[in-house]
Length: 168
Image (tube, rainbow, N blue to C red; front, side, top):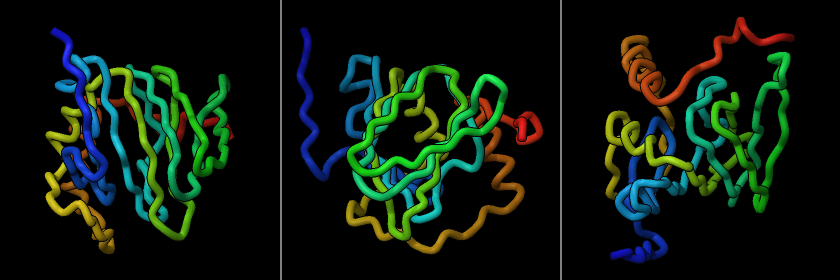
């Protein structure tokens, strides 16, 4: 029997992942194991540390803030584009990409993953978060040991592009 799932506004499973607040709006349990829908709040200047790619596609719908999205062309040259609220960005499987919130305030987007694989990452690296009001605190940089441990977990879910492989 198919079941329809409604996740009401302000609800979901909350995680703090680095300095981002990630809300699982629909995970594998709600989508029959086929997708992952996240609402993500990124502090000013925040975003993943480097270009990365993974085996699933993802589509972003930007809700708040301005983000700089980086990709590579067929010659490994970086290409960037600004995205604003209302913009939609689709990233195919195995495409190098990254984003950074270039606003002075927190930015927010919805992202739909074509696979719920990232639920594992949230379970391993995310800190369950109970307070939905979420106040972004000043980020304390991780120690080199913490960075290494985080990278080992991240590399199970995605591949990183070494900066020396980029063409300038």
